[in-house]
Image (cartoon, rainbow, N blue to C red; front, side, top):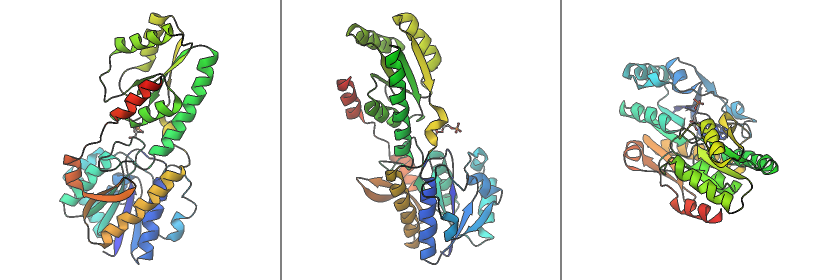
Length: 319
Ligand code: F6P
């Protein structure tokens, strides 16, 4: 391997820049040429490929977002489009690719490896829903952002003796919601991993009111229900003013926290080291603070994210 490419794909996450920097600097110190690809798989398909040098990644370690740009590009599912992407890399003699992204990006990488193109995938998403790793790049920064927002909601919800419902990102993974709810002292938690029952939630809230609670915060993962409707329902049933807040894309931005910068730097370097050792189809992760790697096909098929039921138990005890 002499020339490698790097791209960021899917929803951006704080720390992606630090990961690119890790890849670029490790590649250059091993005398490899390194190419950046704009806008994920879309850029690969559209031939937006350019050479990077050590100064391309100066002053990026503390920056949120991804300077390479990112995109969701579903036409990458089509074989012919992937063939064009591979052709674009091969005409520059690039023979390995490092993909930084979430599970959608992993599927793209797996498909490329099935076509004989070497890929290493790095978990980069705030959702922390990627298999084969305890944490993904961006998760801890998003958590900080969310908890800061919950703290602010607590101020106003306490002043007005209101119930606040806060909708948190994560798709089908409740990690952000659960951790933020514990750190933010939220009274009620609704997660995708646990059956949602509007009436049960109301019962719990009423129990809290009967215990003397003057205000409360409900943390809920996105896509479970319409939180504005839920707020109206709770207000009607409890006669307590209730407001819904959707945190939205605020959660994806901001300067990465120290842990994400270190994780990203280590994973970036590790991905290049794996290529140098001859690996061709791996996804990497961190398990008990150690970097690990798995065959990507095996990981996507067999590994599951564990739901932290013990965390939920603790959270409920603390309310
Ligand atoms: O995967 C990261 C994520 O932020 C999810 O939490 C969220 O559901 C989704 O991306 C939003 O996607 P988009 O930026 O395309 O609206």
